[in-house]
Image (tube, rainbow, N blue to C red; front, side):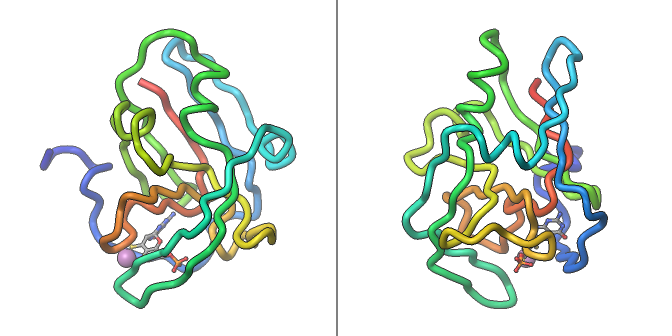
Amino acid sequence: MSDDPLRPHAHHNNSHPPSDDSTWTLCLPDGQQLAITLEALRAWPAFTLPAYWLTTDHGVHGPYQATGVMLRDLIAWHWPGGWTQVEVISADGYGNRLWREEVTEAAEPPLLCYAWDGQLLSRGQGLVRLVVPSEKGNALRQVKWVMLVRLL
Ligand SMILES: Nc1nc2c(c(=O)[nH]1)N[C@H]1C(S)=C(S)[C@@H](COP(=O)(O)O)O[C@H]1N2
Ligand SMILES: [Mo]
């Protein structure tokens, strides 16, 4: 969709964290907003992708064992009702839209990731970071510094 600012996003890589705070907000279809701290995220059941390659225009990093919470779990725990898409937006205004099938039916699930190789990510590394394993282009979907997850 050419009128969708979240997809595709203009190619840009900000390498400086826009803030220090890794707390993000989950916005539900009924307007409820829940602040999710890093501690809360880490307390939920985690999932580890065994080999995540970050493919960017400035090189390929990896493989990492990427640990986080599956987006589909987070949604299921908070919203039993219907939804069609989820917007993941960062503190620097970067964003990505995922359609429901991409979240619930992906063989390798999208994660809100907080650790690589068992080490907590630094804010500079993008904490909390969206990992979309199916995207192997310019890392346009690998949103760093997630600030808002809006379910629609
Ligand atoms: N919040 C945010 N996330 C972002 C970007 C950005 O500018 N802001 N750039 C994307 C792009 S284009 C790339 S190549 C990767 C770079 O990730 P890295 O800095 O960990 O290598 O982050 C992606 N996620
Ligand atoms: Mo990129």
